Length: 258
Length: 223
Picture 1 (tube, chains in turn blue, yellow):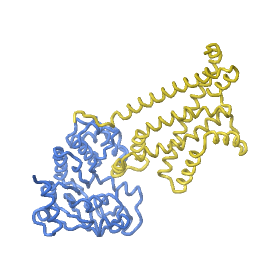
Picture 2: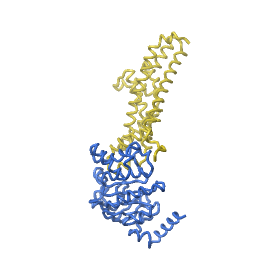
Picture 3: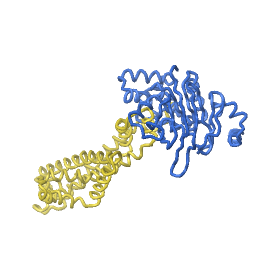
Picture 4: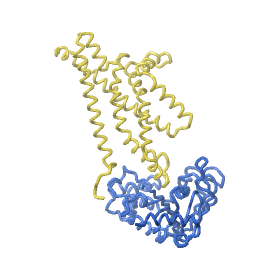
């Protein structure tokens, strides 16, 4: 991946009414690296991820992608125009917990949709690129299936193909395996590993500690809207100093042991 | 039963039924179109637009169709709107149906999971394309049973057009009744015709539903 994006998050706050969902978040995501966001549910990790492509509006601070601020024209400034926001989103892929495939379109049509309506490619070219993306996630034989005919793992791989067909420089994953049956998790993580190996910048909200330990370059731990620590997977997962991380990992181990 | 009278009146009854079907089809198609425009304007329009439309919905839904028709047909000329009986009836049905159709479309759009539009927004799709490609097709699927249902209700509202002398089936049945005193036969014809029409619409609706939900239902396939 020649041109992977970097993300700079500085002093980001987010409120839902009087509830503060994110408090003064600072986080740097270097280009070509995998950063995993972990933490208890409700800690704000999905909210932070969704702020990166401005699906969620942050209230103050700044988020920059390759130096360019998303959502506002300047820190504390006015909202950026719809067109400018859409242009930035074109190079940010996103994968959702519930896949969010369009049920009335086949796998191929799902992947081609953005190429046709956003990139405005010709139909033949869009279809060819969609097919290449589906081949890449191992679904070359499922192109004509509608989502209802695919397993959860296959649906999530179509969703990944839909994102990478747009040739993004940054990929956001919002708990991509949390809605999957345990035996289907591996195929999705496998595709994500391949992407990481190609040097894609990835931000991954996950409960898969194995993935965080083996694939992530950096792990960020969040709790109650605060970023508690960012470090190597080793440092966070095997010898955490913060008691909040220790207690999170303890309950995590208890849940996953027999 | 007097079959001779029926045979004698068959041509005008059939012509009446033709106008009934025309009125139903017109009211359904244009009422639905107007309802769709209203529901989209309510979803995306500025606040004053939404207020005006909400007021329109409340007024039209809150008054009897008969009164609306009188106002349009007899009150129209007072403000320079002079319509013949049939056009007045067609316009009246369209207006009468539009708020119901608008509400059906609204609930159809609301039934589309927000994640569907979010996925489109995340790849940089513009809002009009999201409406056209995602919201409309999926919203229509959720709305279809209610749309068919209301268009069935609308078949029976067409009889009210007889009070402003639109020569639809009810009008002809009344004419036959008063001319021959064959109330039973005449009204039996009316009932049969409507029952047939409704049956046809509901069957058509069910077939359409099966067709468009074909790909949306999860089936234990080769997973």
